[in-house]
Image: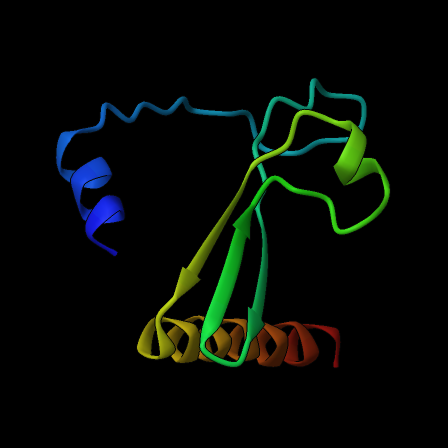
Length: 87
């Protein structure tokens, strides 16, 4: 965690606005994957498949039980919203 704190405190982060998804539109949006396992969370662009080993991907591994619990709750809440929307 000290390394992450230093990166967030001193790093330069940028972003860009992307267009909403539309059929036939340019897909210039970013996405992220997340895995929560016990007290660990893994997040980044890394594909959880064989292609993830061949492409230029990134992944961040964080061991933090409170953060892992918070992220798991967030994913659960999204699943509930998705189920309600499709009902």
